[in-house]
Length: 91
Image (cartoon, rainbow, N blue to C red; front, top):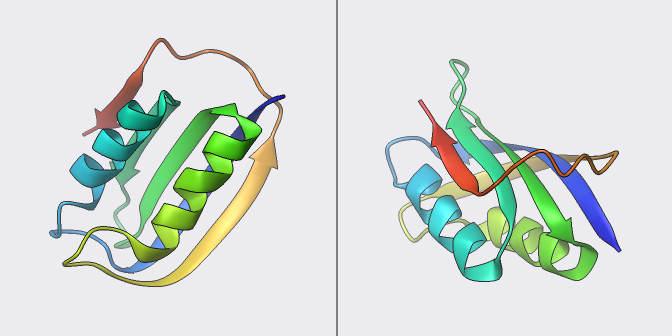
């Protein structure tokens, strides 16, 4: 079953290659969607793909890349829309 997840990641997640690392992870897993920095210091992402794969990247988001320090991950499952062709970083 394909699902969509909206994720907000808090902590030291900007300036530590979180977006680039998320994009690399998502592409390796075959997920579609996007990731971006928010003005409040959080990182926001949308992931679409097979349920078990989306859950795998959500677990990764709780750790993030080596230089990050994730303190919270807010998760909202949404209706799968299949609206993305790939995974991108939004600037």
